[in-house]
Image 1: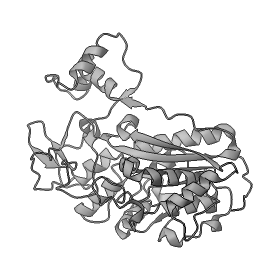
Image 2: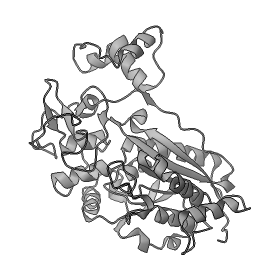
Image 3: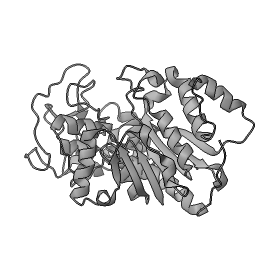
Length: 385
């Protein structure tokens, strides 16, 4: 299945959707350092990346109509800073807001499906009308916003239209830990499928759960056995769940949440090889306490150190803390150990913090791919704007 991707970053979304069966015909990234990382992995012959056709370009200057008809998927992660809880909260007034370009790509390519990922902050009340506009504009991309029209006026016009929308669309709140990432990373996914295909996107069922992790820890002890450890005292947060699960004879049907310890198992202490390099300076203080080893990590942030909550450092078994190495952070995002980074530690951590976890993008990619495969190929007629 043919796809194009905007805002490719260091490749997390592209890698997951490639594993799901999508053949990227073009990837676009503007940031020079992220582009260097993509180029490094292509040159190194890393699986999937070695075949990717990507360009360094401003998406505002890309003519998507040059690809013609027949694209199966348009995907991307528009810059999240305008909507991040840690940003300036400028939303559509932020010059980095690229949702209009995501919508334009859908309008010009008219794919069978689209998939966009962003921060959970996009669903905050302050952005309610803008998220409603994003969804409506993606559902009806052939009625673009006029030059003198704000997003609220455009939304009102779209809602007044008598013609049926071109796409069905869903806005999903998702925790990446529920799909196999070793992070409690809350995100928003905006996905849609063309009306002419004649099917709906069925609900996306989670594959992993905290309940199963609690079962494996405190009911069977399998988690500790797997890591060659003796079970510690059960923490208060797990006690009510463990007590409830102990009443049943069968475990939850999902897989367990993956923990930091699961993700970094086998790496050992930083040894200087393959970006597994110790970075000094980590310290713990109130509100900056790091990620414990036996839970999914806090969501990695696009910074190097000192970010709110200590998201880029771990709490060791002895109670001390240290920063995640680049390789450990890459594992938390699902990137394989052969995935290289072309620039400094701080820039590599920024790229990793901006990436979509590969497990999440693969799960969502398979969700869309299975829907498209079930209906086969449908030739979509061109509609006038």
